[in-house]
Amino acid sequence: MKLKSFIQNTSDWFLTIPDKSLSSAYKSALKIKEIENKHFGGKKVSIENSDYGTSIVTYFETEVNGHLQKINTGLAFFKASSFFLNISDLQDKQPHLRNQQDHQCQDTNTSIICDKLKFIDEITSHYQVSNPNLGTDSENEKITPEENIDKNKLATTNNENFNELKKTSLSQKKNNNNSNLASASKKTGVLPRSFINTLNRIKQEIDPKSGETEEEVLVKYRKSRYRTALSIKFILLLIIVPLLTHQLTKTFFLTPIVEGYFTNHEQIIFINRDLEEEALSELQHYEETLRFRGLIGLGPEFTPEKMREEVRHKAEEITYEYRHHGIDSIANIFADIFSFISFFIVIVTSKKEIEVVKSFLDEILYGLSDPAKAFLIILFTDMFVGFHSPHGWEVILQGVSRHFGLPENQEFNFLFIATFPVILDTVLKYWIFRYLNRISPSAVATYKNMNE
Image (tube, rainbow, N blue to C red):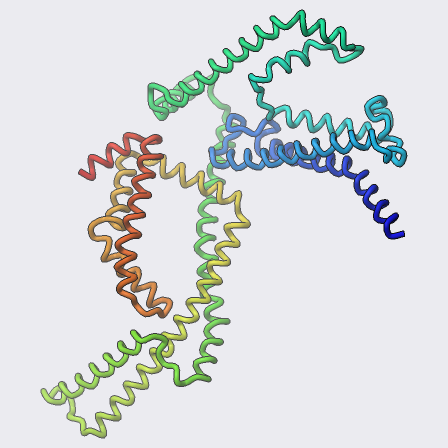
């Protein structure tokens, strides 16, 4: 009985593969259609059909490519499973699949399938790229009639039109080569791209027929204003959320726990040796200051018992101060972990906002004048990888070690200063050579002149 039920369940699952595969492909096509209607006016997802930046269009194209892959996979499973169902013994259990090719679109089920396939073909036809190597096959499909065809007629048709197919395929290859050359020449034009864009903008503003309507200008302005507001809000959100998480978790959750632990372990005063040496040096300095002021008459002379009492009070103050510093340092470690988690959650759940911010920052940075770009690059390099940068890195490393209550390691500091600025300088030079030199060569020339 178990074997029969297992076979029955397996056969039922196999029979549902065509419907599931087709439904998956249909859902992916609906998602592509939703993206087109929502962001590209019902047209193909491309930079020509939108006012978005390159980063946003690339994001939508990535989503569309993912849905197209799902459509191809679903259709492949649909065709393969339908083929095997037609030639297997399981067709007795599904009579409507037996003559699916002969009686297509005659009952309700096949009409639904036809509608879904037709919709999928309409969506995927926007993103099909013609392959010049397949020119012969496409021409054969156009030449052969779709109805009442036999093998003899197909053979004679292929023999008679072989030369024509060869000519058309060669002409297609030439056209593709010419288009490739045209696109290449467009990418590397004689005039700078910014100069051409400026001329096009002036021509569009002068010519009333080629210009945009007031409504289109207003729509673009509103989109730009919305993008700016969204970018600023998201940047503030990236700053405020981790800071609030750090302060709230540290004040209301972590600090009471660490204080309770230090209260139960009163022998713990210093969390590292550096803090202990610093506290002893401070106490010794205080005692010597009292003796010195008493000797020169600027303060009272203390007896040994009075001096011991004053030093004891100061030691209690130092103990409280350094215990609180240890509590604060340990709480900072876990609070920073919570802040990083909150920052990561905001990043993961805001992919579209990140694309908008990226395009916004790219527009600002690359929209600066060449002297401004060169000034920012020189300021950044002199501050972090320049001659005086090791002193700044020392201050940063000391602040980080004190924030987390870690002992300062001079060897690690020297190794970090000797390697990290060099790596940062190499990455910056590669960015200038690889990207900035291609996008704004005049800014690179200005940078070199200012640096010299």
